[in-house]
Image (cartoon, rainbow, N blue to C red):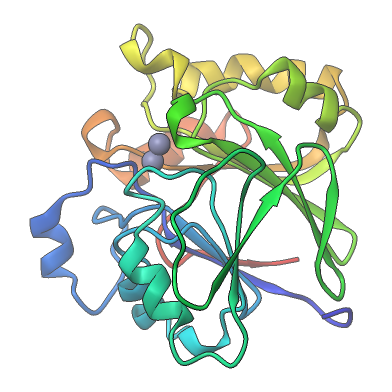
Length: 261
Ligand SMILES: [Zn+2]
Ligand SMILES: [Zn+2]
């Protein structure tokens, strides 16, 4: 994987409040306002999170399940980790699928799945041209939350959901990394006072964070800030979120959105 651009795709961008009826109406397509559980594909073989919609989203995106070799788990909440879907991805493979988790995560054994517990702050070679590093995230501790920094052909992508703010230990590991793509938890909309502030971000929280991330060299002027894990019940419709956040230099992810690394 060291030559040419690597395609990346958001297969889901929703928080856990997805609208079942709307999703059923969009059984064979992605819709800006019928988001599925947060999930992302890097290249053809790396999946970030595998919640209840992962297989469905891969079908819609015409992604080939048989090519998935590695699943990175941000944490074990049901919208990010669905055991049956991991089993489906792992079955009939010649080699075990690697399930990359936080260093202390306890995952009951799954057939043909090899769990890799990532030590915080260490780089792991995933495949040619791609490595990954785990940092602890500020989210429900029982779900073993981590953010994952990917280095793909020299480009850095931080997948930072779920989790509010940034823990000081994570800040230490990410300092001066000048991330190219900062994909961030934006569960709550453009208002203040939400009780979830210790587990999820709102748009005003992200606005506050950006200058501090810059002051630490974690992001730079060229960094793309991409909002994901968007709760439809706490946000305006997609086009309106885009309008509001454009002035802040943020991009709002949507199901089916693609870019290259
Ligand atoms: Zn979630
Ligand atoms: Zn969660």
